[in-house]
Image (cartoon, rainbow, N blue to C red):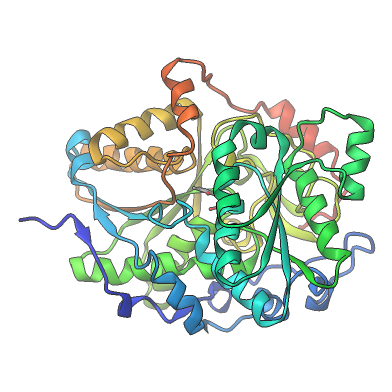
Length: 454
Ligand SMILES: *Cc1c(COP(=O)(O)O)cnc(C)c1O
């Protein structure tokens, strides 16, 4: 019988994370203070994050040990399976070999617990009593709620009000793991009260929710803040995905020509791709790594590379990134996890240096690919993950047209069980083609007065 799932044992879970910073030919530029616009050091982050995570944020150490208690929690769902997509290959009639790493087997249903667990652990080690965060679509909030519960830390989630109303089951998941979930804007913070005073019916936004969660952490000694993407330590924690995938592909006697992942802030892309980029750096391989983003929020393919804020209000340090501008308001597409105006610093530098590629897709093409995948492989992908599927289809079709073999690996970063409303809208033909116009991008960028990079 042919092998569909390539599995590892629990002992084979990697014992170190990979830090790509050590291998980057050009290191990222430093973060700048939001007010003075001078470079800031790690100590500026101390009110928000525990020291160990701050050290990881600025570390250039290539291999960082995974603490045993974290590896122990990882065994709850890791190692995750690597699948050979025989069904999809057949449906596409392609000579390409397609593999996918499935991160939807985690308790929260996505790759996000890979970083939520170590973040909760390091906070616990440093005596933190409570962690605050924001969540839009709900994936990150549920991952953090799950992790905080395991380490006996209180978890406070500011959930964008419109999602809070539309996604009651994500909220209930967080409640089940013991988290407090608030519909943001709230009257618990000054940021929230200010918004409510101006508009009592505000639907909220990720930017507002970030401001509320950060304010809570900055004003309480016992409370810290956690972020589910973008930051260097988050990307490093996610490297567990690619490190496992390499072991699995070695078992299968294969190596990818192309590695693909959807792109929001960069964590699941980095997670699968960076360990393969290491092989490019160390062994001179030429594995292509492609990030797939929505045409309605195309920071990698149509944004600019300059300093920008991580949030809407302009409270965070200025980071060197590909951005559409921190005032950019993406259309309410269903891939909620990809609606972020900027890209992580490391991924941005790699794109600038042409060491990775990026492509953007319309949501209708994404759902079409998602349904094809569900019908050929069984798993219903998260709307975010369907973006990577379109790249996979393009690569598989190119292989067929060229009459050549090609090995494609992609990250199926989550299942879509809480996103079936999106599929309903797709089937009811309520989803429209959506691509942001150049005028919209220019208008948003024109508002920026943050430092340029030459
Ligand atoms: C959060 C999320 C994303 C986007 O975030 P990245 O940091 O770019 O990975 C993509 N897919 C799923 C399933 C998510 O939960």
